[in-house]
Image (cartoon, rainbow, N blue to C red; front, top):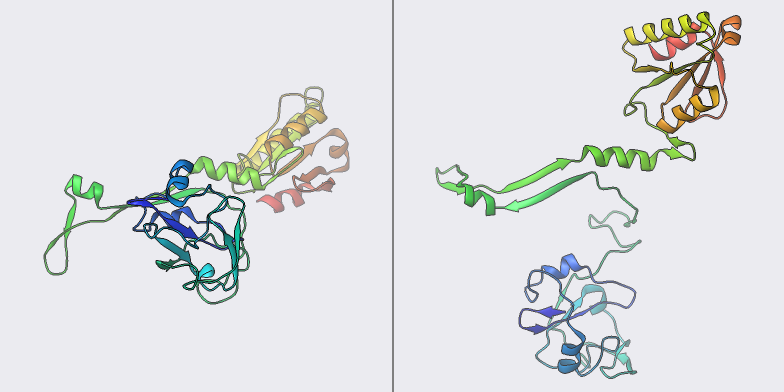
Length: 283
């Protein structure tokens, strides 16, 4: 790495990776981990990247060793000459240590910092931010408070935010299928979609769909009535694409049987429910 006063050697095990955030906090580095240029490495260490090792490095280069690497014995490392490696190397006897620090990224199976169990890595979705701003802006703004002794102190500032659009994107990423979005009830633009079949030809279907829509709306249910007059296939496909959690179909056949055709967005089969069953499910 390119340090404040020249090259800095950071040593980790071959199966580990440098954590650049941790490295950037080292006093020897300029507040950010900066990889050294190959020309500088060749000039100072006498070899190209890929064959660098801690054995025989110039005294001008600090050697900071990760904790997991510092306990190794009889290890293999670069020989500081192109195409060469050392075998059976040991710290202090063959390679000096300037100091030991926590440098590496954690991996699956590492002991938990609280001493209970092991770490497990998993993908996450960023939906908010927490920034520690320190006192930079507080000093510029003259923001201070009196402590318990009445002494004026510049405050420490932080930023905390939840990204609404990120939450929407995260919910869709976690809840979808080949047909479209599968909204959780609490996030859906409408909880229930009423889909009348043939409402432009059947006054009974139209009136029943309007009546059901009015009842659910009056009960505080977020409901949408699809009155575009589309064919069932296109209408259902739109509702699945949008991701409405519950679909109620009103049809002449259902009216004759005294039922509605109901399907939850996460289910593959329709169910025939009576008016009382529909109302009790959502009201």
